[in-house]
Image (cartoon, rainbow, N blue to C red; front, side):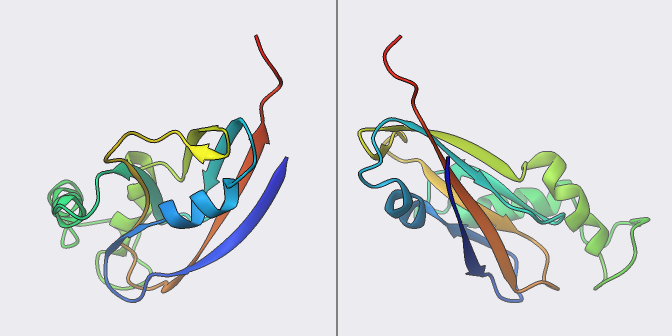
Length: 138
């Protein structure tokens, strides 16, 4: 297995950050296998969605309705409403796996691998990319 950690600056606003370019660079020329993307944070998740057509703000708006910042969260450290950020990975897991064929991501036409970060208290995230090569023909 080959693995690499990248740093992503998300800033102090809720964001959906497209990681597809970084993922494609990592697997370029790698052959067949699986790309596993892992976010080692308790307040961020991953989503495979269409980007650039309004889906990013739609996703953040939906999360805002599902996990309102002003709710009475028991987890209270950090900025107001930070408890919701700790619930986010239950809805958007901190991992995603994408098939790689011939060194290219086998995503659908409009799919992108995205980091979703609603935590305004942590402006820098780490993301681990791991490539698991295929075991041959079945």
